[in-house]
Length: 352
Image (cartoon, rainbow, N blue to C red; front, side, top):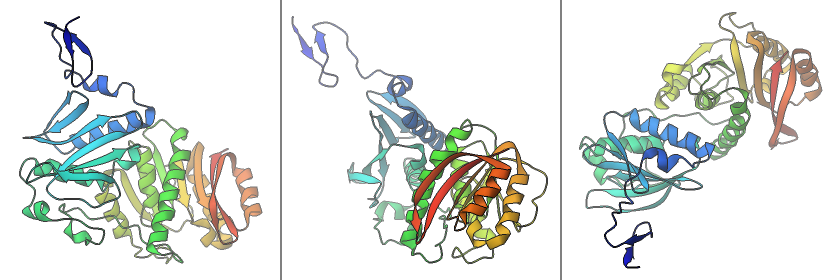
């Protein structure tokens, strides 16, 4: 049989037979993605659409995002989404697997995304910079600048603030970052099964500090509103202030869904609103015996059958567990390492 093998798809094409393996659709390229990758794809697309006018179309095995020219594209793979982002400088960052010149003016960067939580700063910032560059609006500094691990944050092109969740007491900045990364994975794993992803929840972050867990909860439930409660005066986290917490939410693009209340948790919370979910991390062990009043404030603020997801050291666990049994039912528990002689556990409690 006379014919040829298509260079791109390797299909055998008979002489005279029409063949166009480049024609495809966005749905066809994403239909076999796992749930995690589909969630990542949806968030990636939503992020790009939020930048403004553009054309999104499928071509061969890629989904292209274009203004006057393509500023990034996505190749859906079996185990990850491969992003190719075009910028006017070379990024030096752990997320970037490979970078090389695409032209005299642009550098392409290959990034692998496996989970929707990765579609956030700095990746979302790079996508926005690529979007602006593709229309010629990015500053010349962004074309000539080469980022390094030691480059100051002030060199970033975007005017947005950079989130700063501070340093926990008795830790280094690197240790605090690792603690937050581990906590984010663990809390996300426990939070997501509790409610549908797009449920319009009211969430309380009890002892929110600079808003790290506020951000995690808002990421897990993109239609939720989250209220962070703290005195914003204690020294368990560096640079503590309500203003910094608000700046963090603004830099992460979730300011419209988050708010902060200066309040002592050992005193009752306002009766309205009531919350579907409360979260807290490494707060209550710092309060001493008054923590039981703070526990009561949280449970009283929850709706019937609402959830309280609490991560802490529980140095006097028997008293805490006895109280929890009176007010709630234990749904799940994770042990995530230890600090000194105390185990760090995250417990999911449902109000009875």
